[in-house]
Image (tube, rainbow, N blue to C red; front, side, top):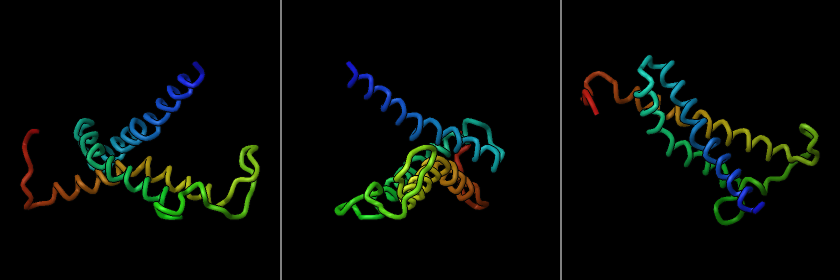
Length: 128
C-alpha cells in the first residue's frame, strides 16, 4: 500500500508542477500582456505548453546529452541550502533554470503565438 500512495502523490505533484500551475501562470501572463479574455489567454498558453515542456526536457538532458547523462550528473562546488548539505551549485542552478522554463514557458510561447497571429494583414478566424 505505501507504494501506491507514493505513486499517487508523485502523480499529483507531476500534474500540478508540469501542467496546472504552468498553464495558470501562462494564462495570467497572456491575459495581462495582451488584454484578452481568460478563455483566449488559456487557449494560447495551452498552445505554448508542449513547446515549453520540450524546452524543459532539453534543459534536463543538455548537460550530458541523451546518451551520456542528464541534469542529475552535474557536479561542482557544494554548499548547504535549507538544511540540505552537499548540493552541487551547478545542479541547483540547472534545476532553477528548468523550473523557470517550465513555469513561465507556456505563457511566453503563447504570448509570442498570440502576437504573431494578431499582426495586421494576417487572417484570423472569428470563432473557433
